[in-house]
Length: 418
Image (cartoon, rainbow, N blue to C red; front, side, top):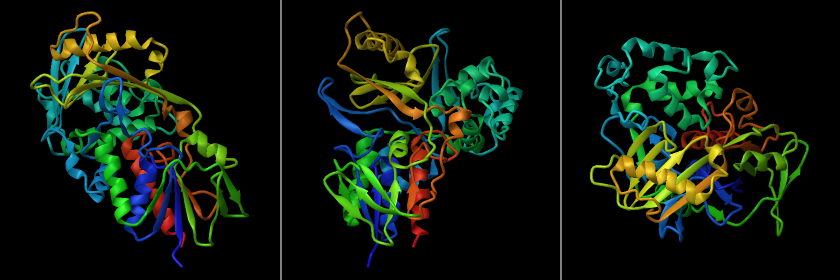
């Protein structure tokens, strides 16, 4: 008889595990507690702004191998857009300076020797200090490994690590920062080209995956929340969904791809990260000006990254806990004033285009050395259960790439359980 692999959670980690296993000919049943797939990486129609927006803005890089393989597998690789070469426009709101960081394609960083391509105010020798982040001591914070000051840090390292780790970089895990640096800056320009889902996250990463699973005969059950687990001596014996209990056959397997606090409530003795950081996103319904870059990095402002999409401008602010209690209208006005000034658009007080603020209080685990040490491996003590999620020990912070890698790793473990 064909065994069944039950995947609990239809976020990106669960979807990637389902795509991986269904591609191997496995019978997959995907269970999702909510009415939609995608988790944090989804799109929805917002009545207030009057258009479809993303729950959050996510940036991929051309070196995110697992994510790009996933997109090719679901037939959506052409839905990412970005420049032909690795380049990042920046603006410093304090000084008014604008510049574009331009990497050369090869692994050898010739760009650091060109004053027109590297960070303004830096010298080629300054970049040698980043080598300390490639192989940091175990359990150290970024601030203990490199000096967190100077033009190179303020104009490149800080915005890069703030976006990747979602925490004030000096407090962040040097191990996780190392994973980011090794796979981006140290890998050369071919790995650093920025890519965005121009049609939205749902149309790029989620809907094509669900269509692919349907073609392969997988079952997707939305609004089907796992409420309890039946444990045997060394295996999971049943899954309790409230209105039904699924008994597992001897060869059946499970991948638990839910948030860490839910996983800890279902599995006795599971250690997981317990601290989290927020991300704040803002969306404005307005046509971007002609020539507006797809993405702009912003220094010394509330805004950190501005994304240009058809019919809207969107903003991401990492480590956004400080903004969680700011009144929505006040926050929207503050953000729009900065965005309008950067884009050259009118910004009269109170004259905002239709807008929406999305605040995710527990967007990612807190990427400190202490919380990183709590991340469990995909393999568990139950022989038919594996874990997936960007909060598991992927060696990367909580990113799209990390989530997809975790799903692939769990799928590999399940394949070996036969």
